[in-house]
Length: 101
Image 1 (cartoon, helix red, strand yellow):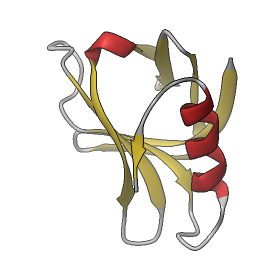
Image 2 (tube, one colour; image 1 turned 120 degrees about the vertical axis):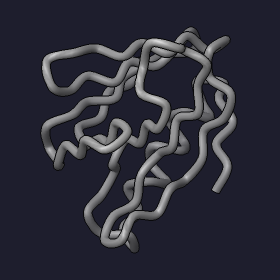
Image 3 (tube, helix red, strand yellow; image 1 turned 180 degrees about the vertical axis):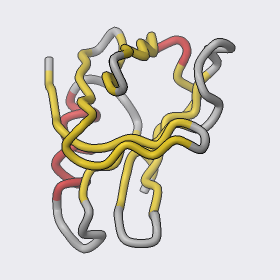
Image 4 (cartoon, one colour; image 1 turned 180 degrees about the horizontal axis):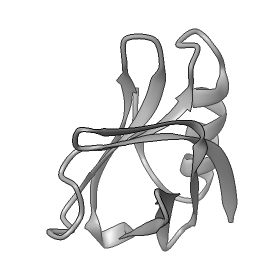
Protein backbone atom coordinates (compact mmCIF):
# COMPACT_ATOMS: atom_id res chain seq x y z
CA UNK A 1 0.00 0.00 0.00
CA UNK A 2 1.26 3.48 -0.83
CA UNK A 3 -0.07 7.02 -0.60
CA UNK A 4 1.16 10.29 -2.05
CA UNK A 5 -0.03 13.91 -1.86
CA UNK A 6 -0.28 15.90 -5.08
CA UNK A 7 -2.77 17.64 -7.32
CA UNK A 8 -5.18 16.44 -9.99
CA UNK A 9 -6.77 17.30 -13.30
CA UNK A 10 -10.21 15.85 -13.97
CA UNK A 11 -11.26 16.80 -17.50
CA UNK A 12 -11.22 20.63 -17.30
CA UNK A 13 -11.04 20.91 -13.50
CA UNK A 14 -7.57 21.41 -12.06
CA UNK A 15 -6.82 20.83 -8.38
CA UNK A 16 -3.46 22.17 -7.24
CA UNK A 17 -0.91 20.45 -5.07
CA UNK A 18 -1.48 19.51 -2.15
CA UNK A 19 -5.25 19.05 -2.47
CA UNK A 20 -5.32 15.53 -3.94
CA UNK A 21 -4.06 12.15 -2.80
CA UNK A 22 -3.24 9.05 -4.83
CA UNK A 23 -3.15 5.79 -2.92
CA UNK A 24 -3.32 2.18 -3.89
CA UNK A 25 -2.04 -1.35 -3.90
CA UNK A 26 -1.86 -4.24 -6.34
CA UNK A 27 -5.67 -4.33 -6.66
CA UNK A 28 -6.34 -0.74 -7.65
CA UNK A 29 -5.72 2.98 -7.27
CA UNK A 30 -7.74 5.63 -5.43
CA UNK A 31 -7.59 9.31 -6.34
CA UNK A 32 -9.12 11.49 -3.64
CA UNK A 33 -9.89 15.17 -4.31
CA UNK A 34 -12.74 17.67 -4.30
CA UNK A 35 -14.50 15.58 -1.64
CA UNK A 36 -14.71 12.53 -3.92
CA UNK A 37 -12.88 9.27 -4.27
CA UNK A 38 -12.22 7.89 -7.74
CA UNK A 39 -11.42 4.19 -7.42
CA UNK A 40 -9.76 2.52 -10.38
CA UNK A 41 -9.62 -1.25 -10.09
CA UNK A 42 -6.57 -2.68 -11.81
CA UNK A 43 -8.87 -4.23 -14.42
CA UNK A 44 -10.24 -0.73 -15.24
CA UNK A 45 -6.82 0.81 -15.85
CA UNK A 46 -5.87 0.72 -19.51
CA UNK A 47 -2.60 2.61 -19.22
CA UNK A 48 -0.49 4.63 -16.80
CA UNK A 49 1.97 7.12 -18.26
CA UNK A 50 3.96 10.23 -17.49
CA UNK A 51 2.18 13.45 -18.44
CA UNK A 52 3.89 16.81 -18.85
CA UNK A 53 1.94 19.94 -18.11
CA UNK A 54 3.22 23.43 -18.82
CA UNK A 55 4.97 23.69 -15.46
CA UNK A 56 4.35 20.34 -13.83
CA UNK A 57 4.57 16.60 -14.27
CA UNK A 58 1.97 13.99 -13.48
CA UNK A 59 0.62 10.49 -13.90
CA UNK A 60 -1.99 10.10 -16.65
CA UNK A 61 -4.53 7.44 -15.73
CA UNK A 62 -6.34 6.06 -18.78
CA UNK A 63 -9.32 4.05 -17.58
CA UNK A 64 -12.61 2.42 -18.56
CA UNK A 65 -14.89 3.69 -15.76
CA UNK A 66 -17.76 5.38 -17.68
CA UNK A 67 -18.98 7.58 -14.80
CA UNK A 68 -15.57 9.15 -14.10
CA UNK A 69 -13.95 12.04 -15.96
CA UNK A 70 -12.36 10.85 -19.21
CA UNK A 71 -9.10 12.75 -18.66
CA UNK A 72 -7.44 12.05 -15.31
CA UNK A 73 -3.98 13.20 -14.24
CA UNK A 74 -2.46 13.03 -10.78
CA UNK A 75 0.00 15.93 -10.48
CA UNK A 76 3.14 14.62 -8.83
CA UNK A 77 5.27 17.75 -8.81
CA UNK A 78 5.10 21.39 -9.75
CA UNK A 79 8.72 21.05 -10.91
CA UNK A 80 9.05 18.95 -14.07
CA UNK A 81 12.71 18.25 -13.42
CA UNK A 82 12.11 16.86 -9.92
CA UNK A 83 12.52 13.20 -9.10
CA UNK A 84 9.09 12.78 -7.48
CA UNK A 85 7.63 11.11 -10.59
CA UNK A 86 10.36 8.47 -10.51
CA UNK A 87 9.55 7.74 -6.86
CA UNK A 88 5.84 7.30 -7.71
CA UNK A 89 6.72 5.17 -10.74
CA UNK A 90 8.83 2.87 -8.55
CA UNK A 91 5.98 2.53 -6.02
CA UNK A 92 3.50 1.68 -8.79
CA UNK A 93 5.82 -0.80 -10.46
CA UNK A 94 6.53 -2.54 -7.14
CA UNK A 95 2.74 -2.93 -6.79
CA UNK A 96 2.57 -4.63 -10.20
CA UNK A 97 1.69 -1.72 -12.53
CA UNK A 98 3.44 -0.78 -15.74
CA UNK A 99 4.14 2.96 -16.10
CA UNK A 100 5.21 4.38 -19.45
CA UNK A 101 7.59 7.32 -19.37
